[in-house]
Every structure is written in structure tokens, then in C-alpha cells.
Length: 262
Image (cartoon, rainbow, N blue to C red; front, top):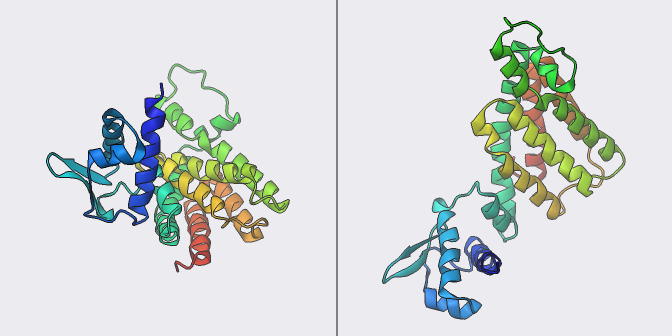
């Protein structure tokens, strides 16, 4: 089915031009003009415009055309919009704003995750296979649910350990390190038990991958950064909310200072 491929190319090019300022807010495009430029059918062009509209980048109106919207209307947390902005001249600003988002959200997520472990210490270890399954019909089902929610904690520790190992080997720019970092921060958000935090997982993943693609990952991560990830994971496992919160704040704060945002 060629149509999805055809319309995705139109979406990508126009999306990059809009977020990059080549097509400024208020600029009006016509469907006929887009058809001619990309040599695509009206059906493909309409589908591309629908995608851009869903991202807040344009608004189509009959007898007016397709009007480019200001950045205040964009779906700025969309991974697609983030990727385009990181590929534009506004990449530094995008990195800064997303790192500030991380600094606001990740410490709160870390604190929430640790508090959940403190409230259900047995359940927190179920995902790692350290606790026996309840054998009583009177077992509290809410405790079982809590255990399921805490399953990311064991994986979080594993991701932190892997980051530490790879970083000490000077593989900070490698794909395995980057994906371990993405996994770590996604697990952190999920371990919080807060669906709003968890919904930011793809957003955070995009900025972590984008930062690496821009060459901002050091080949040899600092020992402090590696140790902080381990400290954060262990603090959550032990239910130490203040320590977990401080470690998460320090991780994002170090990145923010590195890119000149603080």
C-alpha cells in the first residue's frame, strides 16, 4: 500500500519546514500547490494535511487554504514534533526546554516510585522474583496489584547497572548505551504509578535519542552521572523517597548545566 509512504514524505518535509521556520506562522499553502510540489494526488495531500493538523502545525479552511500555526498551537510533546525541532536550528532551545521538563517531572516520579515501594515493600520485589506468591485466599488483592505496579523497579536496577558497565567501558555513544538510558528513564516514569508521568515516556525517549544523534553524549560518561543512575535505582528499591528525588534532580540538573540552560 504506497499511500502511507507517500503521505508520510509530504508530512516530514512540511513538518520540518514549519518547525524550522521556513514556513512561518500565518503562511498559507494551497492543496493544489502541495500537489504540484510533491507530485502527489489530492487524496495523499489531504491525508498529509490531516496529520499536520492533528499535530497543531496547520489549520485547513475552505476557500482560504492551509494556514501554518504558531508554535503555541503545536503538540510540542509529540515525539514527531520533537524530532523535527531537534533537527532544526532551534535544537538548542528544544534540548533546553525538554531537559527543564525532565528536571520538573523525573524527581517527582522518582519520589512517587520510592514511596510506592515503601508502602508495599514485599510487592516491590515480586518483579525480581524475590517474594513468594501469596498462598492464602485471604491475601490482599491490592497488595498483589501493587506488586505488579512495582515490577519496573527490578528492570530499573538492571538498566542502571548496564549503563554503569557500558559507561565505564567508554561506550557512551554506542547504541546499546543509548537504549539502556532510554529504558532507564522510561522505567522510572512507569515505576511512579502515575499514568500522566508514564504518558511522557515516548517524549523523554525522543529527546534522549535526539541528544545522542546530535553528538551530545560523551563517549566516556562522567563517573558522577553513572553513579547517580545507580543511586537513584537503589533508592527506589529501598523506598528512600528523598534520596531518589535528589538523585533524579541531580541527573537532569547536570544535563541542563551542560547545555547551558542553568
